[in-house]
Length: 324
Ligand SMILES: NC(=O)c1ccc[n+]([C@@H]2O[C@H](COP(=O)([O-])OP(=O)(O)OC[C@H]3O[C@@H](n4cnc5c(N)ncnc54)[C@H](OP(=O)(O)O)[C@@H]3O)[C@@H](O)[C@H]2O)c1
Image (cartoon, rainbow, N blue to C red; front, side, top):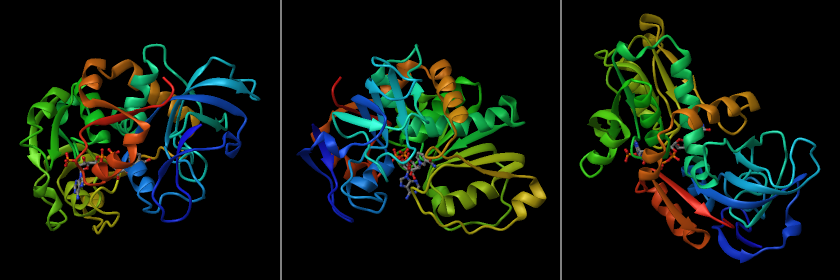
């Protein structure tokens, strides 16, 4: 089978003709599509996400079941698997075939094609979990502006689209606000701010209250400033660390403004969270907007694209075509 393989710790991935006996797991799949996420960029370039070797990277699989030892899944079913350790500690989606555990598989929703599910991928799944937290909170569409950081990236793009669809006033923070203004507006952003206004030094712990809620992919001083600018009773969902994994804050926004800092995880998310997030995506993500933010590449193009995503130069989402 064609596969990208990371041979050893710190090595970069290379395209090879791999032995399918490498694979283990009770559900066998033909991989139709995988996708490219920031985390895949780290794994593909040997930057510390892989935890076992040799490893087929790829944290997303959309595949068709060819054989199953699990009674829940039958040959011919089309399934989605995001995270749960694939592409990190067990073999992932950058191969023509995969063998996976049944526990975290989600059935492809009837309204989505395999390609669309891959274009959504882990980034969109993460965005949906974060948006669901806002929908479940007391923050309502009329409460003021909601901020999305890294808005031109994968998580940010889908978060903007879902929030706008739910009637929230979305403000997109981006380092590419000039060249991507039309794109960000198409996603539903009402206005755009330069990410430099957040990513510089952290300001005071209680700044002017600007955001009813926020979804942040950057971490670091960006997240510190977002928390300090969140309005009384607001919610900030931390999704990533595109700027930094460090977070230096005080308790003041939390104890004086009742601001909540929540997280959103895709790797170990329980099946109920997965199912709910995919229901949200299937019901509320405008498929023409998804089409406009998505690109398809072939397996051999993935290593070059990995460098691009780590440099913050990839717009929206990238599906990787395998056997489709
Ligand atoms: N917790 C989870 O389970 C989970 C799941 C998915 C993703 N994530 C994390 O979420 C983050 C985004 O993932 P993604 O796949 O959407 O990546 P992505 O497509 O590369 O998007 C990240 C975006 O962040 C912005 N950015 C880049 N460098 C930055 C910096 N130094 N300071 C501030 N902003 C910066 C850029 O957007 P602009 O050009 O618009 O500024 C970039 O496009 C990553 O850290 C990823 O690991 C976590």
